[in-house]
Length: 627
Ligand SMILES: Nc1ncnc2c1ncn2[C@@H]1O[C@H](COP(=O)(O)OP(=O)(O)OP(=O)(O)O)[C@@H](O)[C@H]1O
Ligand SMILES: [Mg+2]
Image (tube, rainbow, N blue to C red; front, top):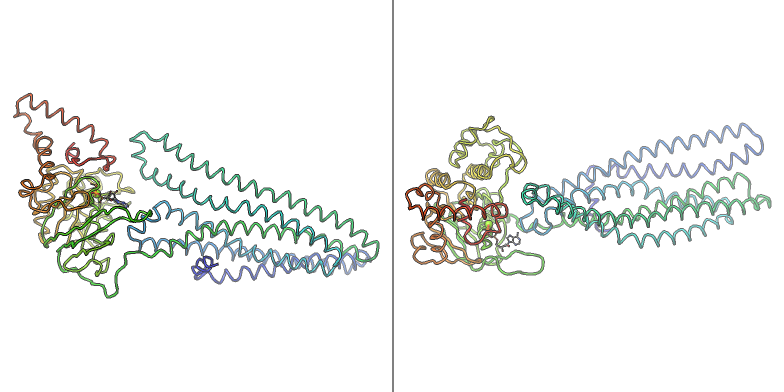
């Protein structure tokens, strides 16, 4: 009940048609119920007595009733669909708007596939159920009661037959429903699995192909689809019993009525006309009953959907701007004070992803972040723009707790080039203007120059008007990264975070991007996550993360001296695998050169797997990146 109220609160401007539809149905049903009654009068007073004027009169009344019922019924159908499609559209709007306010952890909770099912299938279910209930839920009970009353008025004795049929039929239908309902409950869980499979595969079709997993994925999808199919078949075959039961009930009633009715006529208790109208009411009563059960199934089916929609609508975004939020980030200082953080994975608190992080960065510094896969680098930077909230401790930007800022202000000031960055469908220019809506072409060009994106954009036939496909699939990985960096630069942020954003860019370009940063945004704090030490050339200090702990935080020269992890990575990466080494190879003795080249080839092979699944990399993926 509560769910229905919450869903209906989104009717908005469609409240009027939602009220008109049942009123129309009410009038139409009254007309329909009158028809058999008028027919009885027509037969008894007109046909039996041979009075043609009565036949014309009552015939006219019947026709009038029928026409009025037809017109009003159509009107109610129109209003009903207007109201239900309106409700669906409002619900989708509300869901979409709500999801936009979600933080990363809210999204983690529902999963993307889950959110999509809720916005599509679930809303459609609610829409259908609402449409049905507007029209049929008023029609069926009114028709049932009115027809019963009329038949009792005509002959209390014969309407006893109705009652017997009614009880038998209700029992049968209730039995079916009790069996069917739980099946429909399961159907929706399967929908989630199906959508997850579709969503995952269609968005990652390239990876599926690269790993020749089409057949496997196909089977996975077939399994999900078959599960759903089986459930539906089971549910529907139970519902199919409705029809024969109805048939038995209706025809049984007709036979019984004819039998007892003729006796009554012979005994002079009722007239022929009255018997005819009773037969008409049999249909009305039993069909109303069937409709009622149908609605019941429909509504309970969509109750699950309604619940899932309300869940999304009621989820509190766990990151919201505070009241009296700070509207300006004064500078690019970044401070972590004893920060602890863990992801909420559903099964209670897991191990801490970040523990006791304490570090302070001055505005304008360039900081490198190094650490093995899963050591918490991305998590660490996501806390700075408050994509997640800390469990304990404080993260400060510009000297203030990030929770004190308006989230938009904060995220404008802290530009993150995410590890899984995406471009959106539209032109390059449109994509860049995500960073700054009113950026001029010159500003965009300058940002692209800094991000070393200008050279390949200029080579494209349509230049800045080149259309990017959804997800940026028609530019290379390195090009995409450079565009994403340019997009972030356009924000002129106080803090710029690159989460492994130059991994697909060659070392020389990487270095020139960093030079551009130093020249063009000297006051911006730059935090650069990378797997290769060559990216840290311009860094004032480097933070080494190890399993969520700060292993070291110092300038590179000091780290080489004091930090084992860093020295280890530094040495392996500098021994072989520096692009510069390639150029120098010819100066080396032949034996050494061969050894290095074969080493490189081995890594090349590993790198193929690595690029597709970055999380497969181990602590020294910098080696791999080089290939
Ligand atoms: N959304 C999430 N929900 C639950 N756990 C997560 C989530 N994101 C990351 N984790 C877990 O948190 C840990 C740290 O992940 P994080 O992404 O910060 O690593 P990383 O250092 O950036 O690794 P990489 O070098 O591969 O990018 C990992 O163990 C990971 O499994
Ligand atoms: Mg990461």
